[in-house]
Image (cartoon, rainbow, N blue to C red; front, top):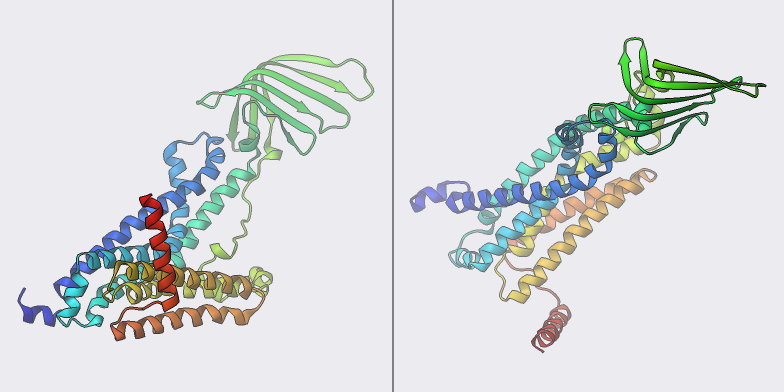
Length: 394
C-alpha cells in the first residue's frame, strides 16, 4: 500500500493489524474465561441433570443457557486484557516508540482500539437487551419443571426421601434404561391405614392420566388403625399413583435478571410490587450502563499503556495503575446498582464514574504522554525491585 493510500484510510494497514490482533486476543480470552466460569456454574447442576438420566449433550445444552450472561459480564474484562496484551507486545517490539517518533497521531493509534471497543459494546448491548433474558428464562423454565417434579428428587439410589412427612421412598439401584431395583415405599398418608410396599423392580410411567410408579414382583403390607395384625398381599404388577406429587404447568415468576429491557421500562401489573421495590430501576440502569464498560476499559488501557514508556519499571507501574483503575470503576458500578435499589440517587454514580473515566482517558490520549507515577511511588517500586532481586540472587 502506498503512503498516500495509508493516509486516506481511517486506520491504515497498521490500524487494521492492531484491530485484528486485539479482536483475536479478545475472542481467545473471552472464550477461555467463559469456559472456566461456565464449568464452575454448570457443575452445580450436575446432580439435577443426572437425576433425569439425560445425556452429556443435554447437560451441555441446558447449562449452556448460562453462557450469554457470563459473556456479558466477562467481555469487558476480556477486552481490556486483550488491549493490554497488544499494547505490551507493541511496546516490547519498540513499535510504539517508532510510530511515535515518526509523528503518528495518538488518535490514529487509539482508533483500532476504539473500534474494538464499539464492537464489544454492541455485542454486550444485544446480550443485555434480549439474549441474556431469553436464555435465563429458558433455564428457569427447565429448572422449575425439573424441581417441581417430585420423581426427579426421590428416585436416587441409596437415599431415603420423605415427601410431605408421610410418604417415604427408597431404591437400591437404578439402571441406565430407567429400571428401578429394590423398591421400598412407606405410605402413612391415610391415618386409618399404614401401607408398606416392597418390590423387586419397577419403573416410572407417565401418560395422559397421570404419573405412576409401576411395581413388579412384590408385596404390600397394610395395617389398619386399631388392628394388631397386618394384611399382606403379593402382586406381580401394581401401579402406585404419583400424580399428586407431580406438578403440571406452573406459572413461573421471572426475576429482574430474566426480564426483557422493555419489561423493566414498562412493568406489567403483576410486577408492580417488585417494580416499586427499586429492583427494576436498578436493573434497568445496570443494563444501560453495561455496554459502556468495554469503551471505558479500552480507553483506559490505551491511556495507561499506549504512550511510550521509558523503562520496564514504568510500564509495570502503568499496568498496575490500569488494573487498579479498571477494578475501581467496576466496583463502583456494582456498588452503585446494589445501593441504588434503596437509594435511587446512587444510580447516577455509575454514570459519573463511566463518563468521567472516558473523558479523562481521552484527554490523556490527546496529550500523547505516559502517566508518570509519583516520585514516592517510583522510589518504593525501585526499593521493592532491588530487594526482590537480591533475595532471588542469594
